[in-house]
Length: 164
Image 1: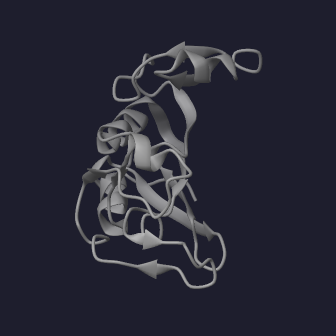
Image 2: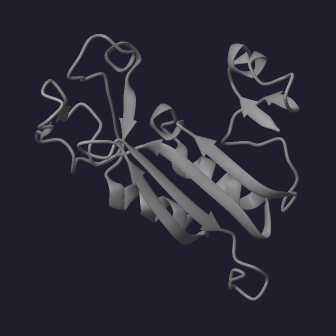
């Protein structure tokens, strides 16, 4: 099931899967009702992403998988200057925690117009743990510096351990 606040976004998926217009902080699903949840390129658009992670953990079945694919917090944000693609420069601001910014190295995208939420990598990963998810795998992609971060997490089973 695809869930989004935007009806326009849901229009792209309604022919491929069931969709529901809803807030990801209050998923219209029963506790432990789905085997997997994916959050794709959304955490910077959601000031309440820790609450989204808690909701994902709530609706996941024990042993269920959560996959996060998003903008890499260490190298993308108002503090990252990509004006020279061969030498990305990180300015002060990366370590600042949980803030909304419209700062951008370019005015050619949407971030300088609508903004984005920034959380440093440790804060983002702690939000997974605080939601009760077990971190399993990580991946980065992009060149010369990573611009995408992927995280695979599991909801522990009834004994408190996730399946192998």
